[in-house]
Image (cartoon, rainbow, N blue to C red; front, top):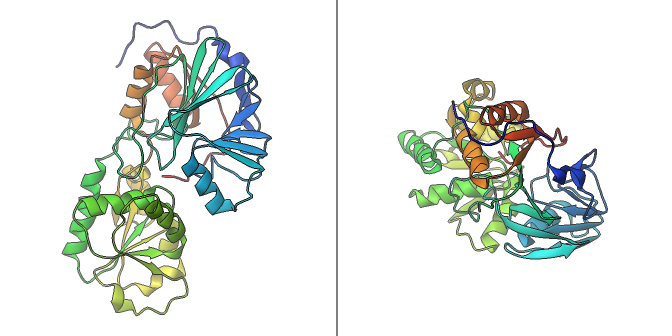
Length: 350
């Protein structure tokens, strides 16, 4: 059991809670008049990253990294917000007497932690983050703070992710051992798809990778951003490819497509799925996954605990995920913590 010499948990709430607190629309910064990752259209939104459960259309004004803004426009159209203000990593802006800064979160391309400093207090809203290396995004940057707002997607001790390179090698080995079968890999379209391609290339897989049409546009965005994805080929939804054309090939698609009519064109497919949820065997069986790959774009349990300790935060606010389990563990460690109970997050990116 981990212990700490810090003050007892559940002490008087941190003063930051007077000007930064949850509302039905999301986490609201009253001192600055903006929301962070709001679930409903608002006048001013600061967005941590481009996944649909964090970045939504209809806001009056959006502050985000250039990559997140580009993703929003790809997904929702050029006019999906009234105005955009790009903020680069390491840059800060002043608003109503407070400062807002952006540093990498290590989650996906363009993902950011938001640093809000006001009245002598520094709050870091981490968004979704991971500490593991990822060849397709900037690594997580640790920022000491007074209050740390953390996700809790995989906040249970059972979740300990495997090294991503190891999982990519498992997939390559399976393809080579079964040259008569198509390997159908389910991946989410933003971040996971491109990370798996990069991991496979880095592990020596140089043959053409076939992509479901739904994965193409965002993958092209990564290519235009300077990431070498190697040889890719699009499989059109209504294509007339012959079944035998995909024997021994790797096909990547959204997870929902694995059980869709679209997948019937492949000869005896071996199904794989890349997700932190594949640590739970029951989930893999439920999806009919033959090769579960434990690759996540979120921090696992040890990473969450280590990160929280390293920030030195006096208080931790926990959101979207296994909030109660993480709050309980932090209490045992002598760290004051509480759940924000925000709604509208559905882990699209894992």
